[in-house]
Amino acid sequence: MRRASLLLAASALLLPGATAAAPPKPAKPNIVILLADDWGFSDVGAFGGEMATPNLDALAAQGVRFSNFHVAGSCSPTRAMLQTGVINHRAGLGNMPETIPPAHLGKPGYDSHLNNRVVTIADQLRAGGYRTYLTGKWHLGHTPETLPTARGYDHAFALSQSSADNFENKPNKLLYDFADWTEDGKPARVPDGFYSSTFLVDRMIRYIDGERASGKPFLASINFLANHIPIQARDADLAAYRGRYDAGWTALREARRASAMAKGVMPADMRMVTMGTTRDWAKISPEERAQRAGAMAAYGAMATAMDREVGRLIAHLKSTGEYDNTIFVFLSDNGAEATDPMSAGGFTTFNTKWLYDQRVEQQGRPGSLTAIGADFASAASSPLRGYKFTASEGGLRVPMILAWPGHGAVRAGSIAPGFAHVTDMAPTLLELAGVAPQRGQFDGRAVEPMIGSDLSPMLTGTVPSVHAADAPLGYELSGNAVLFKGDYKLVKNLPPYGDGAWHLYNITIDPGEVEDVSKAQPDRFTQMQADYAAFAKANGVLPMPDGYTAPNQIFENAVNALLIPRLIALWPWALGLIGAGAALLFWRKRRRRTAG
Image (cartoon, rainbow, N blue to C red; front, top):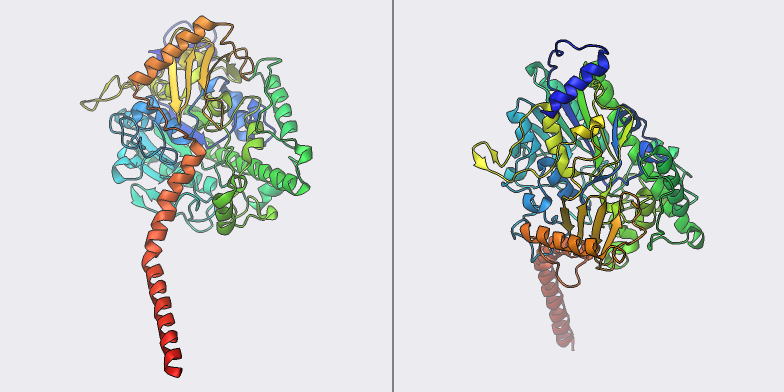
């Protein structure tokens, strides 16, 4: 097994000159997954960001930064692949509930929840002797049979939705009518005085400590709400970022490009596009500049608050002697979020102002719904093109760190530039844990086999990538589609994110997707389109309805889920008011006749 080779390499590094007996086999490692929400590629300091993330940077210094790591363009498809090692269309998340067109719902692969044909990493680790815990955003189902404790987790305090308030037991009111928190499959409330990042780490520590006496290793999956809309942070963190982004998004995008190259996570002298959504900072009003800079300050404050809680968890594991034998994985579920209800116009903006305190001075504070918008999202994903929902690199390429502090074979502080994918995480962690991965069979039943590859050789620098140069890997979400193959990426983005046509880029030397090489390499371009067509057919990818866009579908689905039921519920009252009004008019008319 590759884990054995890692252990032998570790012994060689720790005991130079040792050639005799192999070292005693260590205890199975604990595993901590730190999943951030909507963080752009360069948000972490170790990837070029200016935000304060000292604890994540420390993990990067002790582990490996994957600079060419890809996920899906939105949250639940990524989470499905992370949990299972299976492509999202086979795991049931061909689209997520908020963006799925009604015509697709329930079709094969479009369950909008994690289906029973896949097995989670928690299922497999628990069968291998692990304790398994989850806190935070699940977004893979909301019924008893689709919640975490039905999918391999011993204990879970989970949110079934895409987002919720970070200070109160409230939902994102634009999308949901209540915050669907559960604990161990039963309805739950977050406590008074709650702040999301703090609470999720508190509850995870409680789970870990509560069953330490078992002697079993643990899987701890912490799924932060930071930095999903609504972006919120405590006043002290907001104050620390006040004025930080007054120079605007273009300056930030350029600064992050330079820093990413200096950190070594982007090639030297890489080119970068000017995003079509990016406006001239100097030409917008002073009032909007203040609003936008304040929103980005709240974004930085929320990220730093999350990083602090990561540090608190690490400190706790050090105090209990667990730290050195714990594998840490940090990643984001997709690129930075560009959607901003305040710039959407129409009913969405009206409803946002009606439901939330949107004064500039309230940004990021309790009662507000803050979002950075497309301009700053392009800076958060710098130096890449695109952001969340797109199939461009800014939507799919995210920061990923894998660290095992007590393991000498992991090259501390190194960078793995080779292609890697979120479906690789489950096979890798199972391999490092010494747990045999499922190969199409689990617990006596046939299941979808994992398609991911074990990344262990990239941790030691044995190989630049574990994916063969001639092996295609397809992806699709909301009509935005990709075919990865070696150094190349075939990509198509539907409006409003692109022109709906295929483009071809060498993302190894051109990660900014500046030069379309489809005309220069027509044979490759044609072959990769054929590869994508084969992927789409094999995985049941459905074409999107005419005129489909993800933002419009979010609005339509929210109206169907919230507004129409509320209007129907008000209909008896409306009939009563109409009846009362008619009775009053009849009475007044009769009274006039009597008086006459």
